[in-house]
Amino acid sequence: MPKRFLIAVLSFVTVFALAQPALSVQPETAPQLESPTRGIPAYRSRFNRTEPIIAVVAENTFTELTDYVVPYGVLAESGVAQVFALATKEGPIQMFPALRVQPQATIAEFDKRFPDGADYVVVPAVHRTEDAALIAWVTAQARKGAIIVGVCDGVWVVANAGLLAGRRAVGHWYSFDDLASKFPKTKFVRNTRYIADGPVITTTGVTASIPVSIALVEAIAGRDRAAALAQTMGIKDWSASHQSDNFKLTSRHALTAAGNWISFWSHEDVAIPVAPGVDEIKLALVADAYSRTYRSTAFSLAATTGPITTRRGLVVFPDKISPLQTANRTIDLPGNVPPVAALDFALLAIEKSYGAATASFVALQIEHHRP
Image (tube, rainbow, N blue to C red; front, top):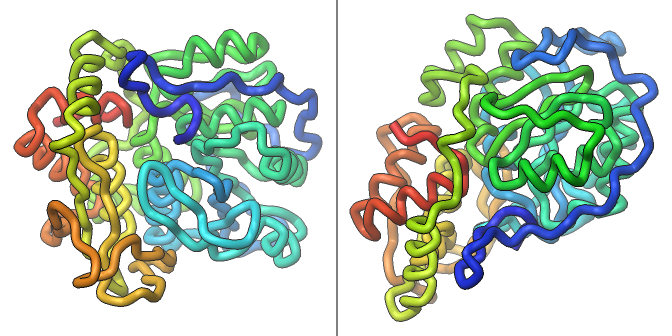
């Protein structure tokens, strides 16, 4: 399970491991953006590109599912950039807390194709925040002028790369104190969903991947394009407005997690049917939510053993094959709602199945304001 992410039931704390000291490397050629701001400055074309190059990078061992899939899916849907789903090495990415995804290319393959680097690099939360290959690649991309976007606990990788020294940043609500202690040269700001300072953008918890993705589209293609995409995605607001104090681990949350964990006899395997063209944003949001209840674990269920290509070009490996393998429950992705709205539908279903306290606990982990 990724560091600084899960809340450990028996100890009533989140399982977070300390990161290594931040490197002293600073970007050499990254463009100087405006002063620290919650908004994201407008894209500036480089290398005579007609559209920006965006890389979403994973570490193969464990990468947070929603942090990775939502930015990829939203940005690919926008049509305003070339978007690539990368990993540090060959082979599938074990996502957290569910699913396996095949990257479209490794970071080495990307470098061969784009030696000048990406324009934006999205860094999700990963298990190995001190991974040398990942840190070196993010650092190199920053030196080539890429804007680095640390989503949720992806901020640990960005900080370990030395890119946050002297800057303002945000992060997952549970990581705030640890981040501030570990990286005293960075000012961690509360009550904002995302913040841009120079060539670095950081966000709060898991679901901040949603508004920051629309904000990137706005920076690249303007407000009208972003608004149209937001409506298609089911996103009503992509501002940086946020109340950090609404997210804290209480005894109620801890007791809910402990009770769900201990009641092992009632744990459920929840199968989500997948087929070619499945909406990867819906799949990620629903699987992520159900796998955080401590009562259920989500699996992808397919009719064949082969990989499944999603609506926007990701490749998912089925966890279970029907009818050879079964689950306690099978749930279909909501077909009549926009992609992002699937999250609130999932939370409502979780509330009906496991209670309001469990739904609240899931929302807390992903730092999501429920309607």
